[in-house]
Image (cartoon, rainbow, N blue to C red; front, side, top):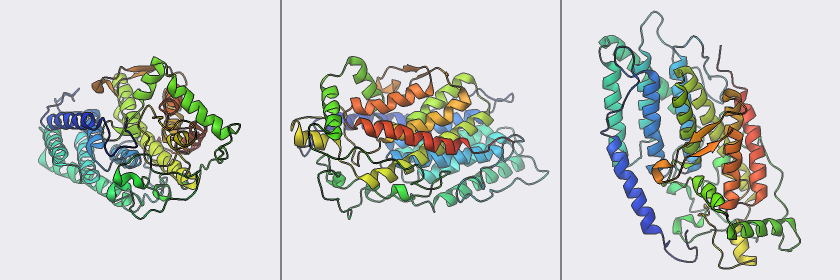
Length: 453
């Protein structure tokens, strides 16, 4: 935990070593030769292309400094649409999302009567998109991008007529260019000062957010204007608005005080299972693929186990990407509308000045819980696809020493992600419960998208 009264976190060395270790891992990715299920001619199938690129993207999210959860959610949204449109352009079963997503104009079309290779189209689209969306990742990330791109480009083109290779690659890149140009106008392109605006004025009063650590950059909150970004499918950031949190009060008999006591009491008496849950869903930037990456990882594991066809892969990943991206826009809109104080601030001020939250308190307002909103949005989208009682195991954190967890449904996972933030001491119960409601609202908009002809 970070000691908020100190200039330097006591576990800073450990965190740096973890980051360094994962940079070593990502460096190995750049030179790794990937196994393919392969087409009959031995080339990687489209689903192999997709799995390999998403595997690297999850690592790039983890190791690109500006990729906080909202920024990561945006990338997953646009990358999901890119992959979907690349496949839909040649599929008799899928229809384009242009005209359904805000501002997405008709995409390039294939030349009639000309041959295209589906693996090459998809590889070129995702490779080009990844290079654009992660153009400011570090040198190791750039080497990983180049290494995987070179390997997959060579493998997908093996034995294919040069004119088909060139046509397919150019077309795939044109899809990525179209989506990237669309993305530039959404309000979330180009993050300065790591997303912490130096000129932000804190709102006075005890009910409002104040910095929760001594890190100089984080004396202003993360991405205060994110809720004003153009959304993918919900009308705007205010579309799934929430009722206000319980009235701020310092009266021990008030609902607000009782919620703080609950956080404090639970944190002091965590069971081993509750500690596991809090740790499993921590999803810290730079130490994990972040919350939206966690859900994408979870779904990739499921679809690989099911040997899902490529049309299902891209349909699910596009819907999930849109759900978490709009989830963070909607959540951030409400966070800065209410600008509520964090438990650590309130508890230290009124209950116990020495109290530490079991996990790190992130640097932005409390209400609602981002984990809850995006997880409920994801569960609302995934449940109709896979089923109400679809059971699965999630091994997202296994490489970090976290044991896989079993869930009997996506809603069990979403509810656990939500309550993990109370166990971690960073959210009041109202933020969790209302965040789940907001996610349900956002997910219903995503479910209304038409993807099948």
